[in-house]
Length: 309
Image (cartoon, rainbow, N blue to C red; front, top):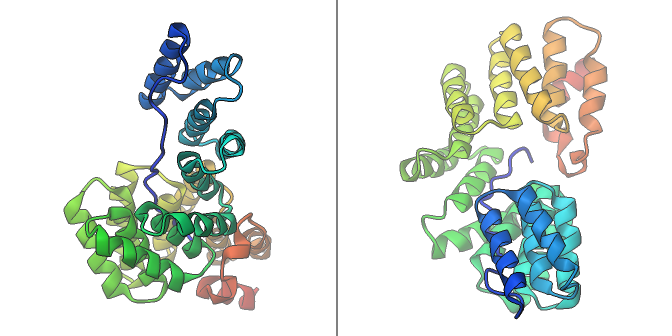
C-alpha cells in the first residue's frame, strides 16, 4: 500500500504519580511539556523521574507517548513495552504501543496485537480503526474494509476511517466510491491534506492530470509529505513533463527515500529520458523495506517497465 492515514489517539496519564510534592510537580510539568509539543524537554524530565520511580508504569507510558509523538517509534515501543511488563492489562500503554508499531511499519504485529486486544475490548472503535490500517497495509482489504465500516456505522463523521476506506476503494478501482468519501471529508474539514492527496490520486487514476496536480498542490500546501511530491511527479510523468517530474521526485527523496513508488517513478523518469539506469531504479524499488507488503506484480507501471527493460 502507498498511503496510510491516521490521527494518533495517544493516551497519557495526567495525574500525580507519587506522594512527594516535588515529584508530582515534575510529573505535571513533563505532561505540560508533552502536550505543548516540547517533546525533547518532556522526555528528559520523564527520564529524571525514573530515577526515583523505576517501577511506575505511568511514567514509562508517558515517556513512550512522548517518543511516539516525536516520531521515534522504536524508542516508544521500548518504554511502552516496559509499562506493559509492569502491568500486562495496561490498556493505555497497549494502545500507544500498537500505534508505535503502525508508525514503524510493523503491520503484521499491529494486526496480531490489536486482535488480542479486541478480545477484551470488542466495541473499541479506535482498535477497529488501527486493525483496519494494519490490515490494509498488508493487503488484507476485506478485513480492513470491514473494520472501517464498523467505525463509520458508529461514528459516521470519522475522517480517518473515511480516508482509509476511500484509499481501499481507489486501489480496487472503485473510484466513484472513493470520490464520494473524499469529497465528504473535504466538506467536513477543508484542512485535511490527506483528503486532497487522495482526491488527487483519484483524478490521476482517471487521467485528469492537470486537476490532479492542483489537488496535490493543495495537499502540499497544507502538509508536506514525500508521497504528495511523488504523486505530483507521477502526474507530470504521465503528461511527459520530465523536468517538472524530476524536481518533485528529488523533493520526495529528500523527505523519505524508503518508498517503492518513488524508485518506480524514478525508473519511469529514466525510461522517458532514454537512460540505461531504468533497471537500477527498478531494483531499488524491489528492495525497499516494506516492498514485501506490496503487490508489485499488480502495479501496471512497474510491470510495463520491467517487461520493457
